[in-house]
Structures are given as C-alpha cells and as structure tokens.
Image (cartoon, rainbow, N blue to C red; front, top):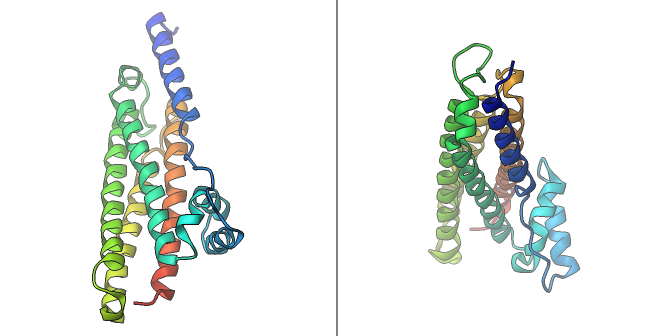
Length: 225
C-alpha cells in the first residue's frame, strides 16, 4: 500500500515535472525586418540538417541578422543550442536536488539495480554541463575566425584547422548529450515519469545541437578563409 507521504511526494514531483515541461520550449523571437531572401537562405540551409523543421523554426526569427551568411548562421545555431542546453542543465540540477526526487529514488531503481533515478539525473547534469562548455569553446573559436585575422590574411589551412576544432567540440557536445539519455535506457517502469521528462528535455537539446553541427559542417566545407 502506498503511504500518504509517498503519495504527496509523487504529487509534488508530478507537478514540478508538468510545470517544467510546459516551459521547456525554445523561445523564438518574432522576425524583425526579415526579407523573403533571408528566410529562404535559412530554409535552404536547414535542409542539410537531420531536423530541418526544428532548424528553421528555431532560427527563422533571427533571419535579418544572418543575412545569408553561413558563418553567422553557424554561430547563431550554436548559440541557440547553447542557450537551450544551459536552461536544461539548470532544470536538471534543480530536479536532482529536489526532495521529491530524492525521496522517490529510494524506490525508483534501474532494473539492474546499479543506480537510482536521482543518480542518473546527476550524471546527466554533468553530461549536459560538459556539452555547454564544449559549445562555448566552439563559439569562441568561431568568433576568433570571424573577428580575428582578416579573411584576406588567413590561409585556407588555418581556416580548416580552426573549423576542425569547432566540429570536434560540437561532436563532443552531441556525444555528451547522447550519454545522458543512454543512462536512462534500463530504468524500469517505476521511474517512467522521470525518464520521459528528462529524456524529452534533453532530446530537444540534441536536435538543436545536431542541427548546429550540420550547419557548422556546411560552413567548414564551403566557407572561404
């Protein structure tokens, strides 16, 4: 029989997760002074990603700032992914510290008995925070490419080397996000509400990161030093 305290804990956890889900969508600013050509450039560029509709929806509001620049688009895509990753890391950190999760995790175990749900969330926080650091590194390198040595003075070899750093960091960020959701694969049905909420949230970040990496690859392959 479920005790009153367990019922109350579950109610608190469910409420927290419901509220968090309702506020997890990526914020998209309204388009300002955006031309059809600006939007067409983003739509066409997004066709090279695995999630073109997510890509277009998340970036279209910034079309006037991109102005058909692959470099700006790549930087923007990383920035959008980074913003969502930071928000998700903060959410997961709060969830891992919540008394509701701590209490329920005493009975919410993996089927193999190795870890509790609370431990899986803590691991996920670490993974997403690592992804945040890697995306920050990517942005710093892109800013150096675009704002450092003038393009006319930068060799093709230097450009390729710097872009390879960006690609490496973005790939590592995506791997860390994958590691987070992999940690919930063997969780049993008792932890279903935690598993689905955390994984759904991180999946949003993964789609944005995957799209950002694809746009970075396009810029690396086609961009001129």
